[in-house]
Amino acid sequence: MTEAGTSRWSRALIYALLLICSLAFLFPLFATLSSSLNPRGSMPSLLPKAFNYKNYVDATTMIDFWKYLRNSFVINAISVFTSTFSSGLVGYAFSRIQAPGRKLLFMLILSTMMLPNIVIQIPTYILLQKYGLLNSFYPWLIWGIGGTPFFIFLYRQFFSTIPKELEEAARMDGCSIFRTYWNIFLPLSIPVMVTVAIMNFQEKWGDAIVPFMFLKQAKYPLATALTNIGYTVQGNSELIVQEVTAAGSFLFMLPVIVVFFFGQRYLVEGTVSAGVKG
Image (cartoon, rainbow, N blue to C red; front, top):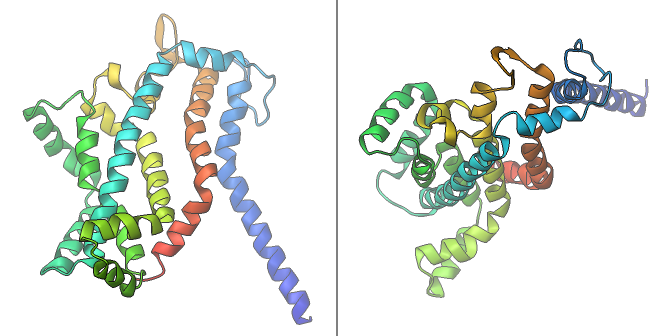
């Protein structure tokens, strides 16, 4: 077989694997959409037996859908804005500012990624209860200001790739450390910034456990409401309406899908640029 023939077969095999993986990842989304359009009480099927759009109307009326959706957006806005900004600032400090113990402190921060989240939730709950911060959105503000170890790592890796001469030129022009970061490094880090914002949004949007622990029902985000309240038959809280649940789940996924499609170019670019230099 010629080299060109081998290359064609290799390319075909790669496309086949990519197609299989794509179908595997898209199947849950398609199954949810298909189930959400079925009439109530129908048997599950791969393709919808009808286009019952009323399930989507019920999904927004059987529970206080818009209030929970608003809570989700508030939590995400607080977390994404604060965490994206503070993680960039800390990553810049670890990358460009020489200080004793810098490497040790960076390793300590990275090591916290190894801690299971459930381990720190109980002491966090006790601490928030002591300071009267339960059933409020202040914890997400505090966690955001503190930054996120993985995002700090991404920023630090990206800033390490920027030539030192650029920073020295800014200092010769009289820029302070913060102004060098704000005017030069931060605009250059837009791909990483968008990547961090998307990853943070996706993480907080789907988090149902932490809000369940720290908030009461009126302040639940949509993920917690769908998990703990759900769509049940009136008068029988044990009987779940599967088709309406699927419609609510599909509506819940839409913001993440939209954010991904608008930011996918930056997501790939930011991930690659952050991994250029170790």
